[in-house]
Image (cartoon, rainbow, N blue to C red):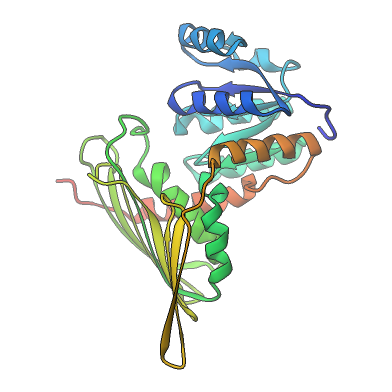
Length: 311
């Protein structure tokens, strides 16, 4: 589907908390038209549709020939089931992170997209945080990275392990820092309020010498999103939530520091805008399925060795 004339006809599948935000952003983009909302709860879909002046559906099959693209914002364990149907119909898809909850399912989605010619983009929202690219410009040869992503219990997303719900963002960032294979994985987790791990600590060692330590928690009193990198030049400290960073470098034994930010941005709007542009112009998305597969593989490696300390 190349060189479509705007507006691009877009559906949002799953109009819960985050799906509604997608609807709002798509409605604000001049190159897109919110053609339908789809939800297993038709009454809720109709309520959202009336508010946004669009159509409500309960069946994915009815989207064929009436939309060009779709945003998949259903629970994570349904990503493969829903996205595979859309991609098989030739519909371009933006699927929320994680791409899937197993690497086999994630790979299958990539292969379906490649077979039908449909485009798949994955919602790793930090890619559209402007401070992240600035941080990568400062990082040359990372030796150690410490990553933290915590916050209060949101009351949703608990159907999957916190590794797939929150840590997956940091694993995507980590996959950008190194493509070297993992040589050692250690992890432990706790089930606090759900039947899946709500707090996880993990340590990954890579063949190129990089060591990464990660913490993700959805039962913390304080919201934190950021990371610290020790590299050949010094230290880079990134506050992803505040969209700011501090760097410390050393020349001839003297320390030089720099602070950048905070920066204004609407990452969700920019993500959805990039998806619309890629779909309209037939371009490769910023976060392709194959790119997101790397983060799923890292998540899988952590979950597979995790020691459960809940009892």
